[in-house]
Length: 89
Image (cartoon, rainbow, N blue to C red; front, side, top):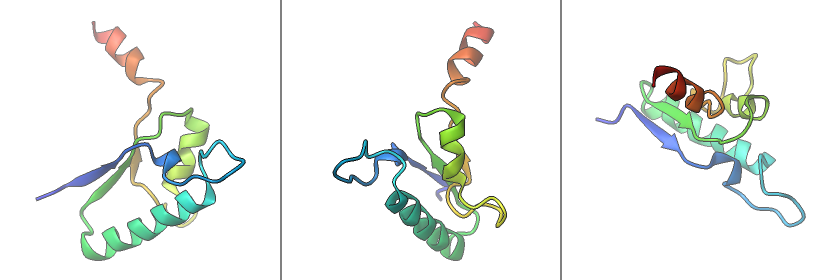
């Protein structure tokens, strides 16, 4: 079976004239809808956000913190990934 889904380039799922098309409200609404479906139908499945942005921007893709998160379960941490690679080389 499938354990999870990598959601590629999530900051750019929607476009809006006059914006840089990053982190739009429509994107977060869509992710909340996807999360509700995944949780209801496949409760052991993970949503992994691929958002190549700084952590302070990526944290929004976990969703509403007080509710335990209603968007993605996990996110890549791109700024630390090359540092880990260089440390183990």
